[in-house]
Image (tube, rainbow, N blue to C red; front, side):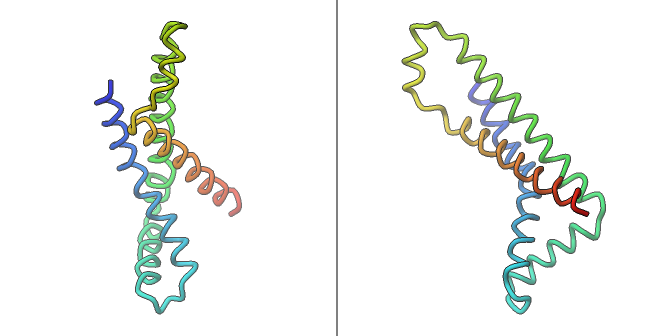
Length: 126
């Protein structure tokens, strides 16, 4: 089961990366004056995304939605596995830290929800 969670964590990182890159580029491009190299690179990334309509739908909506769904299902599955423990073993299991991959899955799930919220709110504002 740990290998599955690690695989899902890696897959989630790969799927959420384009959306995080775009939002970071928007923030960097908006903050620095255009004469700085980092701001020009950020503006190039934003221009590339906005020049192709499919990138906005796929990379900013569908991939974060897939990360959110996979993360919720994975965390729900690990929650159900912990719920199957006996009453005596539950306090002992609560003392053990969760594996790093589970924390990573939870972090990418929350990040994808935040990305989706930003994108959907921006779409509703226009």
